[in-house]
Amino acid sequence: MKRAVSRITLGLFVAGLIWFSYFSVSQVYPFNWKVLPRYYKLFLDGLVTTLELSVIALGFAIVVGIVVALARTSHSVFLKDAGTMYVWFFRNMPLLVIILLVYYGFGSAINIDRFWAGVVSLSLFEGAYVGEIFRAGIEAVPAGEIEAGEAMGLYRRQIMFSIIFPQAFRISIPPLIGQLVSLVKDSSLVSVIALGDLTMRARQVGTQTLAVFESYIALALCYLLITSTLSFVGRALERKMVIP
Amino acid sequence: MTENKILSVRGISKSFDSLSVLKGVSFDVKQGDVIAILGPSGAGKTTLLRCINHLITPDDGDILFKGSTVKSDRKSIRFFRAKVGFVFQRFNLVSHLRVIDNVALPLVKVLGKKWREAREIALKQLSQVGLEDKAASFPSQLSGGQQQRVGIARALVMQPDIVLLDEPTSALDPSLVGEVMRVIKRLSSEGRTMVIVTHEIDFARNIATRVLFMKGGSILKDTNPQEFFESASSEIRDFLTDLSSIV
Image (cartoon, rainbow over all chains, first blue to last red; front, side):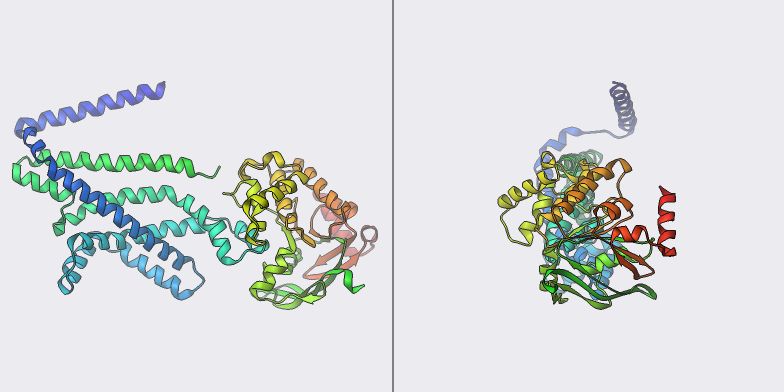
């Protein structure tokens, strides 16, 4: 009850703040919302591209992440170092620079489609973070349980598949959802290589209609909608998968 | 005589860096023996037990199982471990598996049984330790004593020739020690062959058929419980005095 009251109060306060800001801006900036609906197809097109890009990149990032995590937790010093180096490089490089390198760098040597340049850049970049998430998950499995597997006579591979991975995966879900949200947000950077994602479409609509502020407000709301939906679904999944 | 020897430990040595933890330990375990390994902390008791089933690879020495040396390749170790139950101090149940699946796991993964059949056997084994009603629970929903009883059921379900128990009651609240002790006591009355590393004098006095007293990486005394508790050796007297002063 107390919580509900405080939430309603906060909601009213934020709504008031938004209305006040909007009202102030509208004194100097003539908001013209009527033109936007005519361009909804462009927004929709951008939304689909952003979602496609994110889902495909997430798939590859998970594959990259699994490889990186296995390398970093393996007994081979070579693989360990290789994994560490990969993570070092991609976590210390701005995503924007990676996109430029892939599209304008490699793209000038070999013909590479914008969309796939975006997918490759995002997968390589997010793969480093996903790899660290999986590694933390693997390392969080209690050593005693692995020992119990050894003591009952399981082979290494059986220990991995029956004891380590199922737990590591469950432990990884919450941070993985967070990373997926980041991925969707990060994907807006691909607009610099004129890949028709949500952000680029919003810029297009803005310049065509001169309703720049309106387009970007719509853009912001679109991203909020996607990312909050993901977080919501993620929390539901998390509750379902949690080990009591 | 040799045919009823289940296990022979021959000159096992182990060092960690420069610290020599086991200095050529040897002893035999015969069918039906219940051996309590006692000794002060750092004597190498747990290391010895872990060396026996290769959780730690010994630097030197041999383990003989029913008269033949256990080779150190994957297959031999797996076969040997399947015949040797191990009960951990901290239970080490697999936390994402329900109790019944914890017990069924080795049957499925080592003996290749189907989950259905394995669960049936596991349920019978759980009822032996009085926990069939907890079959669907997860380990974290059980008390320490219950978890350890599941740990024992998991070790027994493979019908091992010998069970190694590493301080099975040390991680338990004093009020939960009794239920685990009763289970272990019953195993000994059924004629199970066991090696127990323990700080519970009660184990040594009432359950054990033999007591090994370890100190500084060697076995100082290998005797029957009665003789052990009447021993005049100053080291054993000191150890027993220390132990009783803690309680």
